[in-house]
Amino acid sequence: MNNNNLTDKPYILLTPGPLTTSSGVKSAMLKDWCTWDNEYNSLVQDMRKRVLDVAEAGDDYTMIPMQGSGTFSVEAVLTSVVGENEKVLILSNGAYGDRMKTICDTAKVKNTIYKIEQTETYDLSHLESILKEDKEITHVAVVHCETTSGILNPIKEIGAIVKNYNKTFIVDAMSSFGGIHFSIPEYQIDFLISSSNKCIQGVPGFGFIIARKSELLKCEGKARSHSLDIFDQWKVMESGNGKWRFTSPTHVVRAFYQALLELEAEGGVKAREKRYTENQDKLVKGMDTLGFKAIITLEKQSPIITTFYAPNHPDYKFENFYSKLKEQGFVIYPGKLTKEESFRIGNIGEVYPTDIDTLINSIKNSMFWR
Ligand SMILES: *Cc1c(COP(=O)(O)O)cnc(C)c1O
Image (tube, rainbow, N blue to C red; front, top):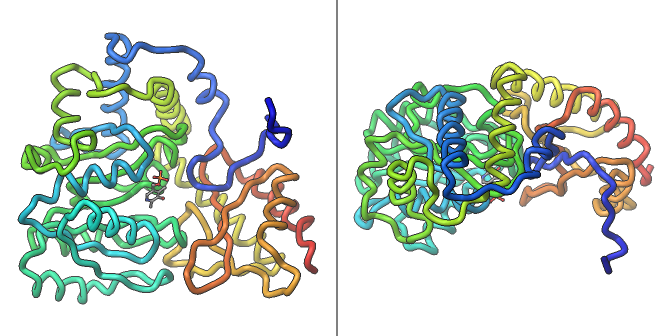
């Protein structure tokens, strides 16, 4: 190998996707599978069923995996579900909400946006007035945990309003599904999107959609893209008993299946949420002793990722801080807020409270600017 900087030295990823996976998940990828073989296709069917169980979704729902990163699945939903004469209201308080608008604008999906500050959540009465006034709106799309900041949006309350006005409800739960406990039917979600490499703790390679069947059936012929058509993907998968339309990311699916078994062994989503919450709690308290303050207030903060104000010191540079931490085995995330200088630390994946203790110590050793 020519690249002398490339080493196999492991580090813990505190970046929420891809994240640190278990050795069980990594080892599950050592076999090559045939994409249309029966044994593999029944694994796919079992995987789909298990995801619906995680979502506490009954027979009214189905699970559709889609090749590509999570964004491909967001795009697949927006371009397959919102028809030519329909219009989606996008709620945005961060980069992932904004991305939904970019997707719609690019694919010429009619849309409008309710955009607020990245550190705030939505005014529900304002949401109601938008739905009351703009009669063209047929769908509402929102991000659950906005990974840009780590803020948690009140999707249950939003869903209640959306359904009061009889609209289709789309939720990007990419970074919360499997890590925060909720029931899809109870939250009245019609299309939920997540991916293999977030709280289920698999490796990157595909996204998935949990769809209310009655809503999915309305999507036939609506898609603006052939490869991202979720209706067609679903139809072929149902009739072929777990066969993907095009080449399936076989190793990734096998690893994801192992990750689902490990989620169950941990005690399910509630147990996982408890571990993540402990991680996050320890992180914020530890960072506080070092003088770092979280930007999102406690009531709105998710147990997934936390944004901290960057130190207000002339010698501080994120790149140097990042490198010093990486030398000690931790990789963190740059900030993504538009107004504040910040950095982010994720706490999902194969990461335990003792790792957070070690992290806090490593951060203390990395504060070169003091
Ligand atoms: C990770 C993430 C995505 C998808 O990102 P990809 O890089 O395409 O996998 C979308 N929305 C949210 C909220 C996310 O956290």
